[in-house]
Length: 160
Image (tube, rainbow, N blue to C red; front, side, top):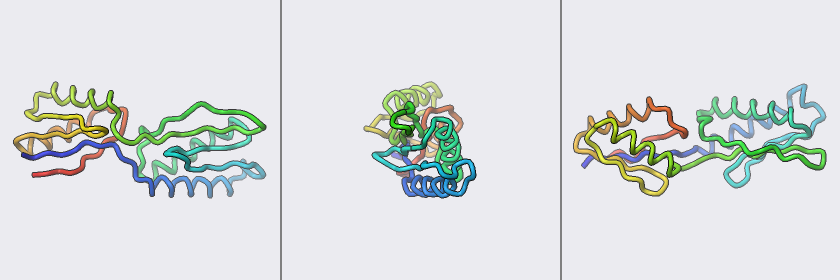
């Protein structure tokens, strides 16, 4: 029986490249001259550190631009609150990976409401969609591509 998996994954190599490019841009920008600021990847999050909160907002814009250029969807970012202390400000940007349970349930409900003859099962942090016809599966893929989801999704493990 044909099937495919709906997953939400990040290409960490591209995230690392985007962070490196953003660090390089900060060192060359005039408004960051003489300022200790930078990005660092820690525990599936990008930590931004600067001397003041307005600089963090600028750094956030730079990081977003670099991630988009590298093909990373901004829906997979989740920003924490700004932490201030000791003449420094820092903010962590968590990178969401894997389908969250609420989002997976919403996708299953959306597939059932579409009346396409397929079954959707939640399997951990991914979703398996099975059906009798390949065309039905392609219909579901088109439905999910056009849907307004809270996380970016990819389709893997297509079996015929």
